[in-house]
Length: 261
Length: 159
Ligand SMILES: Cc1cc2nc3c(=O)[nH]c(=O)nc-3n(C[C@H](O)[C@H](O)[C@H](O)COP(=O)(O)OP(=O)(O)OC[C@H]3O[C@@H](n4cnc5c(N)ncnc54)[C@H](O)[C@@H]3O)c2cc1C
Ligand code: FES
Ligand code: FES
Image: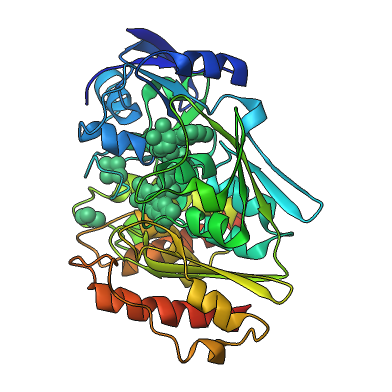
């Protein structure tokens, strides 16, 4: 790992100043960034830890929204959302393993937009709002392809507002070695409309399966998905599963999620 | 170089570290607390698990400077005050929960975190909690038995 300067500000204002410097980068739980640094795939001059900033910690529930501050760990998010949004709590509580969940954060997960990460599916399926130090970004605009996001240089996610659906469920088919999703499907129903977000499957990262959403419109049953096929084109094929396998798995996981809602 | 100080196993420690110094490196190389093992250095195996402010973390995936001001517990802090094996360690010995012993420090630290969160874990809950701890020798069965016994012994002690 290349060396870097390290700063751990206790206020958001100080973090923003530190991150405005050239080649400085935010550090949240480090569960992605530290392995990346070890592989010398990043070479920041300075890391600015967000973990000592009280304003970036905690879960607030109200007005049909669960608001998770960016540096809230997966463990704390799972505890905070358990009563109001169980599907989100379950998703957070099944990321990786306990030690990863004690460090990893929602902000780090969304900013990283790993094509197999869990949180992006929840954000996209619920139509969450990603709030930064500069603006509010809707989940539909936020994810811009594998590892890509709408965030600018030095822009920090401060909180994520998840609208609480009338019913929701996340089905994750685990890749047993990495514990990420081989395919994960988050289904959220608001009234008679459903949103279906798929992670782990596409070369473009998380996406909405709009055909499934249309099929579920007004008829929210597993059987509504029976006639659908997802094309394997553009899906990930690797040693863990072919594109065809992932296409098949997406339909199965979507069906299970609808049935569990 | 930066100065870092925190408490390890009840003792105040401090030292000079680089930004990139990992907590695992600082524990092993500066403090010579070599009970914390580094199996993979890629966040996968859990041999390096320690507690920071009561939470199990992979010390190979945290910088020493992030531990500033915190309370760290390592495997060296798990023995009883008289130096005899602590409850979980004893259970691992009694139930043959280790063979080569390389994974054991991480297993014991994870087990300890589990038992404080959930004093009466089921077999499934134990296996689930050990998701991030890899053992290449035992096949896990005796580790699970050891943790069940340790949880029971801890409950009896508390009663
Ligand atoms: C063994 C293992 C298993 C895992 N399993 C899963 C899994 O099953 N599902 C899953 O979803 N994830 C999984 N993860 C990833 C984990 O959830 C990470 O915690 C997460 O992806 C990154 O969050 P972090 O807080 O650790 O971010 P970091 O690693 O600190 O940062 C990641 C990136 O985000 C940037 N960043 C961090 N915070 C912010 C912010 N507030 N604003 C802007 N940019 C920011 C950083 O600069 C960096 O580029 C796993 C990780 C490991 C090591
Ligand atoms: S050495 Fe830290 S997880 Fe393997
Ligand atoms: S006892 Fe050898 S790795 Fe677990």
